[in-house]
Length: 586
Image 1 (tube, rainbow, N blue to C red):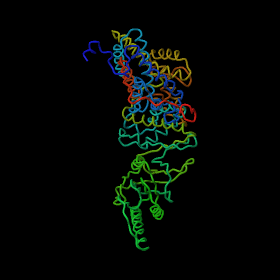
Image 2 (cartoon, rainbow, N blue to C red; image 1 turned 180 degrees about the vertical axis):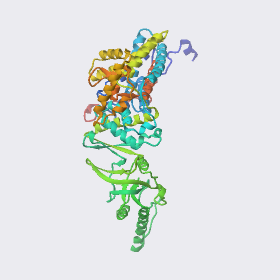
Image 3 (tube, rainbow, N blue to C red; image 1 turned 45 degrees about the horizontal axis):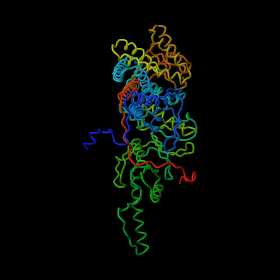
Image 4 (cartoon, one colour; image 1 turned 180 degrees about the horizontal axis):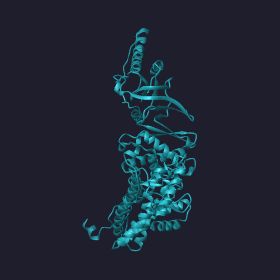
């Protein structure tokens, strides 16, 4: 060993280790991988974003513009790009919308960081500057609130719910945002508890039934089960519901036993005891006023016979999660044994019936006379599975937006207006900062331009012209003419809203008018105050997005050394293809 030490240690790591260090190998390569992921989803940003076809590892084809779905289905291998995936997943979990903004903004931050690194700026200076800019942006965005809803009282106003839902849905289903926002708003209103902050996203269910068009989608105050009843009776009104998690059958012993029967009378008596037990259970339910029996396991033929004899509705549900949600919908308790059921365990449903929708027979548990049912179901119709899946993702984003509104009801201007205003003010702030950090703050401000620039690019507009017009409009101070023009736009919006499911003009008039609200007009081209059309974003979405994107970018910039251990296991099996394709390799 001493002889080896005298000659020097030939290498630091074992065989198979790989390491990358320094500016070129580590930092710039990490930034390149992250910006590559951002470029992949950037064309899907905004209402006019293009769809991506993703074929996952089980060969399922997914066509969507939802960045959260695209990133979750991709198997990203690069560790730096995985940081962006984790940030987007966190945004989706916390807010339910804005995952694309996180990835695109973080990618632009790293792209600008590369330019500054090549100019000679140190990564630590960039990290400090990005931290200062992010902190200042969080302070500025508080001053840009244009509308606020009360997180308790206004949650029962359909028009104000639609206002928050519309922007989230329009980025996924542009052209259907008015119809879908009203659908989601009514469903959330049916399930809204007395304390709005206790709103549960899981209480809004979706059922996809092939056929018809998206405009045929409806709401059910209750629950829709994609299974027809087992019994002959399929309709009950104002009835009690019993829910069992066990099988509706004769009692089975845990051990095997042998029964010796000597004659036919003993055989008849043995069968009679089973029949008497099943009949006793069904008759007891009938005497308690139960009209619907839900079972989590099998229903025997004998039990079905007595269920039909006493005129009950029987349904078998294999999913324990569906069983739990149905318990919430009818306010019942699941019973684990056939004996000992109490009145307190029974639920109540106003109407249980079977309906044919398209080619499917579904069972509907509807709470007709109750003002609010704990569970609401949106029945999504569509010509293809792909279209219905995309609508389901848009509905999910809308429901998550309602949950976020119950926590913080402040809104900022949409259509890229708030990002341009943040960029303009951060540029002013950078001029007041002494030191090299001001270059990082300017890079941060320039990265915020990616939102209006991407909206313009995806719409087919000249992005450079749009950015210059936005800076010019935001630099002008508010005048009485702007206020009058804003009122006229609100009046026109009210006329447009009539009969189309749009947002009430009275609410639009309450939105604060200012040149700071001018954003990208993707309909007519150019720039104007899009808040008059109800294009506003939840402030919490932008706050969380800016925070997560900044943290992801600074995390990647802090890495200057990558050490990769040899993968576990032996050599991989060679890919020789199918034995019928090439016989020589087998």
